[in-house]
Amino acid sequence: MSAKYEEQLQEILHEAVQDHNYDRAEQAVHYMRSLERMKAFIAGEDASYPERNNAEAVPFGENGLVDLSAPTVPFRDPHLNVTSASSAQNRDTLLLYYIEEEGLLKFKKAPQTYAVSVEFFRTFLQNLVSWENKSPFSSKDYFEAFGDSLKEKSTYQASTLRQFITLLFRYCVKLNILEKPEVHQRSRYILAEDISVEEVIDYIKEHRILQM
Image (cartoon, rainbow, N blue to C red; front, side, top):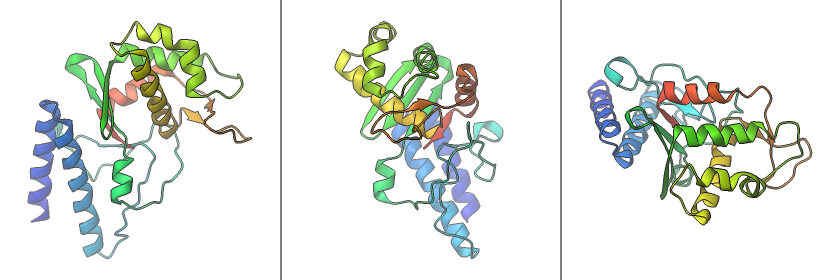
């Protein structure tokens, strides 16, 4: 019975992504994870099903369907997040979608969704890399330094772009592109070592959906 539900959920997820119905895709992923927790509980395994990675790929198998048994491969070597699923955690979930046919990336944290070109995100990352070996910086510092150049690559007004960049910093922390300095400074980060812009983009393109 569980195999039948899993197959149906995979089909729903695949169709939702194809139709750009990301709310439905998010629901499908949620129910697939719940099904895995139920199976683990019945098997006498850890039913809390903790997140193994900060950034968890939703891997695709044959015909573009999700293979929940496939190992997830984090972009960096993230810290373990041992919190179990909850409604509060679901509200804090970050989702990232790559839409190949449109060359777009969609970043969703309920209730907001932002869509930008891959080139926008490439420029965003290149700007981050230019801050390497400099003092810790915040999203506000970043916007003041690079906001004007990014406005040219998006349709967002300045205030919306500022909010989006703040959210992008959260994604970069989850992906271990940004990290806290040794001496903790509120809302300030440093660039992780050996970050490759193209490696990050290729990772996102390869997995198509990331749940963090």
